Length: 358
Ligand code: KG4
Ligand code: ZN
Image (cartoon, rainbow, N blue to C red; front, side, top):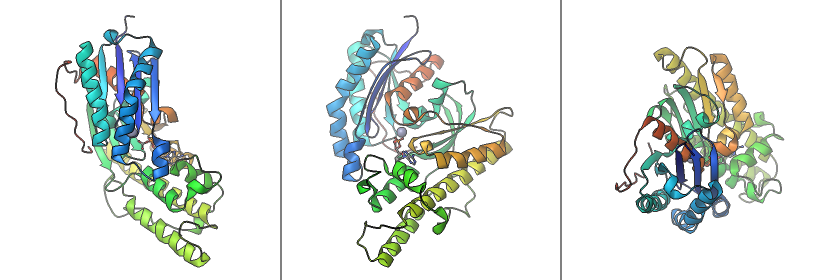
């Protein structure tokens, strides 16, 4: 094949992912091992367990991606691996594996920033020229950024406490949704979206966070305590034990989902107006890309759609499988960097990871 080939490796959180892409973004082979089912049961990610699961799976996942692509490691033009941000212990597994791999096969190495990879994935699927606005919302991320180039991002806002998916997961856990017959296999966010459909979101009112703050940052911890207080009060009123609320569960889910949607929509609107004022987006057909696990929520999508429509932006939401962590998005970032000759390191370079958030 004439096209250059990139192997991408992702281990920043709870997915061990690998994929081989050609330069056009065609996925030649991929493999993904998710630890989510393990962490769902334990009520959150325990870093040492995540690390062990990455160690148990990395070799096989990379082998699978390579075998499915029928590419020999010596044919690779580069190995791209997430080096930050994420859980230090998890990142370390992918990085150590990659360092050994590139030394063994003398392959150039491309360190990847996990958030940049999320932001660029959409360009693998359709033509989205720089610059464009990105809203990343998942269990671990929450940020607004202008993607101006492969390695040029202007961060407009981030979460001051927790990410929206994390908040929804914690609320779902407080409501014991995992024991709910319709929700036992769903993530917290999915469970809340499902139940909210049967609820009356107006029965409860939660204050949209940061109403008085003039920036594009997010905060969800205050919303979580508002919701927790409401759950507590309802439990008291019903005279039931903690975590066994029967009535109003879907109403609370609906109100919480609505407040998350409203907060995301308001901050994104601020970001768009700021971009327009500063001329940061192209005057004709600017795009708003929404990605991350929470972006698959249809109620939240509708709220963002309304913001995009009133401001003349096109809302683009990549399919869920490309919104969540995987090796493909890392390989694609490698392809984009290879094309532009940005941040490509020799096989023997010693890269260390930076476990800090951006
Ligand atoms: O991107 P992702 O798979 O993993 C990372 O967090 O990196 O996102 C998972 C998060 C979880 O917090 C989950 O509750 C949330 O995304 N999520 C949703 C929905 N599906 C997943 N939140 C709201 N509505 C959904 N439909
Ligand atoms: Zn991610």
